[in-house]
Length: 152
Image (cartoon, rainbow, N blue to C red; front, side, top):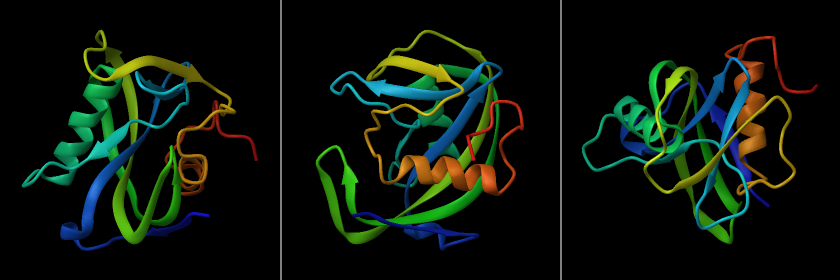
């Protein structure tokens, strides 16, 4: 079981990855990696020396093709335990959550095979014990529009 916690802030040097709750007018934007048949929020690891916001913008572009978007920080979070996709972390790892509104996208060029734009949460998550909680926290903190909001 994953232990997921949310924070207003954590030290920048603890932040190893980013997750972006991204939307278009049509709904939430979820990704399917070419090596998996499950969906996840856009995001990934921070490169050495990369500012955390730059990592979020890069990952959003790589995983959704977003070229015109607004992006803002929501909160930090930590995860320990069963992450999903056969991954487990005994150590507590920290990431930053962002909310993005995507206005324009270009063709995907990286490891993402498919985008799913939806108003409903999928049944098949890559990280089922983490990403649905992140979306709920984004909504709880008021960073998602009312239209297409997650079910209560």
